[in-house]
Length: 363
Ligand code: FNR
Image: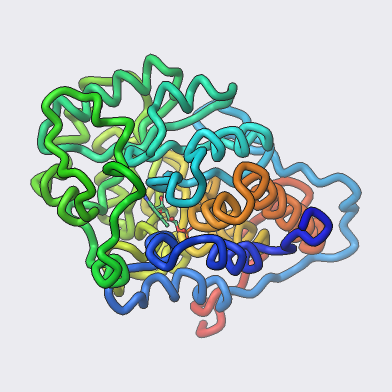
């Protein structure tokens, strides 16, 4: 096996499919309803072409960048994804170690199986904490405090989940997380009313607050001094609102096609959001990134960094911590090669003219 490692994300996906039960593979891989957005997140990258420049001295490539003042060796971040014990018994601790060994920033999901403190203690790294706002605000406030005192550097507030999208594969499979509810990190919290082995949809209905609004961003700001990135923005209008509300960053995301089906592919609206934000805060994007060239395209269209969800989960499912690490390393090496062949020596040189979008071709 070690001599025959997968050579790309898609091969990891195949291994993950073999390693997991259908229910758990479908949970990771699936999307909402017709899965149009899920497919289009990937397909939209295929519609963008690269415009390489040649005879640039590319003997040294520098992929480093920074986010909220933190230096990163590469713009690739591990997206928050829930229930890593679905993929591997070591759960988020394995993923955190994999990310840390690549010096990659990881966003820990609110729906992690491992406790916040356990992940924090497992290895030294810069991490952000992803938050959903509960009906019981005190639960979310407690989690923010725990993340703060565990050394997390920012809160990623996910705003595209007032209710769970209709994930028909999970409905068909009667998806349940392994063992207990997939929220081990939370069940120690007082009075939290979870139903043993309940379906994810029921859990979310019982706990998430569909009345969440922009004023809750104010509330969150009032209870933490950590910077807040708003995840789940798809329009210029909301991007401007996020900046007005005091967000330290905007993440263009459709939750990997798991929430609103027929929401646009994220890469197709990135530029609209970047223009609206006008440099006030960094813009990140996730959804459908499977190649270094995808990362390059996102950066050319104005993203400061990208987040990668399923590919890391596939690595984790296929080969545990080593697999997750290998996926991150592979994407980093692919980005380095893409930059080399496009004549971009640094992320600053990944400019808009390095890509040709469908819109460009119609002009
Ligand atoms: C997610 N995503 C997610 N987002 C979030 O804010 N909190 C969460 O708990 C989860 N959980 C989750 C579980 C699984 C299995 C997946 C696949 C995704 C969405 C995630 O952060 C990200 O937006 C997408 O995964 C990006 O798309 P790709 O990279 O998976 O195509």
